[in-house]
Structure formats: structure tokens, C-alpha cells
Length: 306
Image (tube, rainbow, N blue to C red; front, side, top):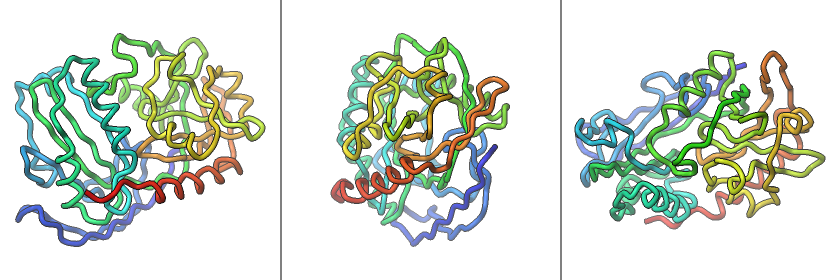
């Protein structure tokens, strides 16, 4: 049930030093998830990094091996969408980064220069920008292209999800990536986490269920979830009820879609629940309408250029 997508990126020279190699790329690749196991082939994704005040090709970016951010995942990060060389909801993402740092008792320096420098080197292109701050005090930025995903299939993984750091966006994503690999093992694009039959979230996104035209999503105040910035932005476009959905609610849904900074409103066409396969329209009428409305909202509310 994997989804085949085509990623086309046309680049122009950017002032990031002699090591920079621009390419024009057009190829078809199979993707499961932007952060998952089936990534684009080498050369199909362009990425740059911010290291100690310099923008370099991402392959040249380094971090000290003695930094506990690398050794133990003791670090925080946040990621934001970039459209036409402008971020979206940057203030909300950086506010969440500050909350994550406070939860880890980690000193957070001023990081806006990271965003400014990366955008200046990137030009008027789309992508995903990550800001990372480690226990060792290292600040890094990463800006990369993303595949365009038309639709996804999900595999329900019923596991304990609450931890002492629930709701904190740390670099410790080993469990999340394990869940994505488990979904891939069952030939699904991504996992849908549940605990004791209650739906939670995807490893790197939020799930929305449509019943009789009404949209609902698991409530981060009642469930152990990350507070989704993209879901908060979607609520500026339409009403999204905060719910505690169960597997029965999933089976009764008319449509499903995923939201995250990397995947604003992506329809779900199938969900595996054990040996049971649930099928959904992709996209359904509500999802199609909200996808168009949210795309317009993003275009209208992009952050000013630095």
C-alpha cells in the first residue's frame, strides 16, 4: 500500500560557498513517510545546514561526538514548513521549541539567525526547516526539500505511548522511527499509535477523523500527545473538535487525513487494524475542501521575509 510520488525541484545558484552543488532533479521514487524508512534516493533531495554561523551542504555538517545531544538524544528541535522561501507559523514553532527546552532544563540561545541565514541561502523554494539545540550547547539548522505525498496508508500499532517527556519535542525519536518501521513491515506508509484501543497520533503527525462532515482529532490535553502547531493552524480554517477517539470511531469514520508541518492535510486511503483493512476515499469531499482551504491559508499567512 505504498504511494508513488514524483518530486521535481529546480534550483538556481545560492551563496553558500564553493562546496555548493546545485542540481535540477526530476524522478519518480517510492516514499513511505518523510521521516521514515523509505526515503528518496540519494541525489533526489537537496539539503543545506547551518553550523556555527555558516551555511554548508548538509553532508558537510558535523557535531562533536561527545555532545550528549548526539550520544543520548538529549536535545530539542522543531520543524516548520517553508513555502516560496518563507516560513509558516515560525513564532508558534519557536515557542514550542522554548517549551521543550524548558522541560529539559536546557538553555536555549537565540536561534532566529539560523532561520534567517538558511532562508537567504535557500531562495524562493519549498522545503522543511529544522532547528536543533543540544545539551552540549550546539545549535544546528537543516533545510531540505520534501516529497509531495498524495495519500497514505496507516497501520494501527497498539503500544504504551505516555512517557515522562510526553508533549516535549526531543531529538529522542527512536521509538517513533521504530513505529514507522513496524508499519513498513506491514506494507503501510506510516503507523497510527493507539493505546488500549484509544487513538493517539502518528509518530510525526496528527490524525483527523471525519464523521458526517464534522472533523475531530485526538485531544493533547487528555492524551499523551505533542501539541500540533499545524493542527492549531487548521483550526483557523475550520472547526476541529478535540476528542478521545477509539478504534470503533476509526471504523465509523467517513474520511481520514493526516496533518503535520511536513504534510499539511494528506488523505488516508487505508488503515490496517490487525488483519482488518479499512478503506477510505482519497481524498473524501471534506478532506479535499480542507486541503484547498488550508493551502490558501498557508499562502496568505506566510511569515515575512527576514
